[in-house]
Amino acid sequence: MISQRSVKADLKIPLNYMENLYLTAEEAEIVFSPRVIELKNKAIEKVMLLMGRLQQALAAWDAATDFPFEEVWLRQGPKISKGEQYKSLPWVMLDYPRYFSKTDVFAFRSMFWWGHYFSCTLHLAGTVKKRFEGPLAEAYAQLAVAGFCVYLPEDDPWEHDFEEGNYQAIGDMCFEDWKRLVSRQSFIKLAKPFGLERWGEVITDIVEAYATLLNVLNVKEGS
Image (cartoon, rainbow, N blue to C red):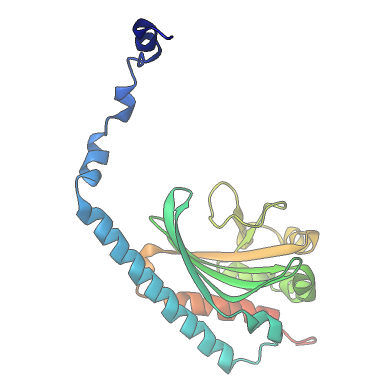
């Protein structure tokens, strides 16, 4: 039998235990106000609607272009997803077009990241990336002037933010370094951020970025 005295000894609580549970003044202000979460949820709903409108605008551009889409690249259709914990903050993503296989990728991802920015990313991998290596290498100047960045990590293509050295502005590297980067691995990601203050213009901004990227890929030989 365990004595009452030994039980009490086992239940001793560290002196600083409760201190770790106290809310800071800033935390308390948020916790005590349901309005904060209500507003956040309404804002996310508006971002979801914005992504829907963006998808329609991207599809309209596709319908008017002669870009050589493979049928399989468009087969999956658009996808809008959301979450709460991309590096501790809410996010919303639109994938359109979205083609992901075990080895090949042709995807354009538009993202809203709470408190940071909107962004768009063209992700090519496998035989898709190999197909467009030539036009990409020659598009150095055009992509640099347009403000695109290129993804640097070689082992993990699934980071989406511009922090911690994930991306480098193409205009900050020389042409020879750019050509080496285009050919060095099985995937490439080209991305561009847009400040949240561009909320009212971001659909146009992203469609223009999409058009620039696909026009770069669609350069005809000898042109």
